[in-house]
Image (cartoon, rainbow, N blue to C red; front, side, top):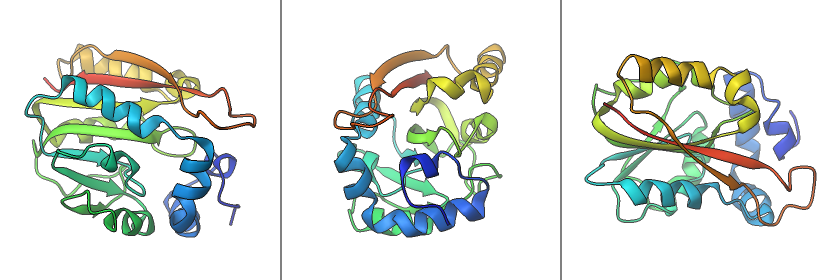
Length: 206
């Protein structure tokens, strides 16, 4: 099993390997990754979501991990969904989620249509994780008017097919045009990823 670190996370292949990897990293993830690197994505996503949110509850935290984004959304009713039960176990201790859902985002979700008024995500749409194939299913469980705010790594926006997938959702009248917000992912990293940037995609379910 790869050593739990950022480069190894970017090279994961398949649900079983991902679950095993995050099983090993769950207990130390917040300290060895988020705190050490000054991980800014959760706070940035929460800021963008709060800026436009109006009665957009409940909120689903997509790929919630250890609950870093949930901690930034105090005052909202938030559920967490993640492939890793071990990461969600850490999130549960923080007491910020109404419910915890272990599920594979690349498969149909056992969630009724139109359940959520808000969808947020930090660090899930990236190398070795989840691609755009989950977007139609996420829009199914979002009600009309639901606000989405989530990060994507610029390098994979086109190569993984996010651009075309989102364009089709806009063309089909499923979502509003996307607004993009650019930010530096880390403020403490001193390695090859120190200058890494991400985009926050923000749009509304029509």
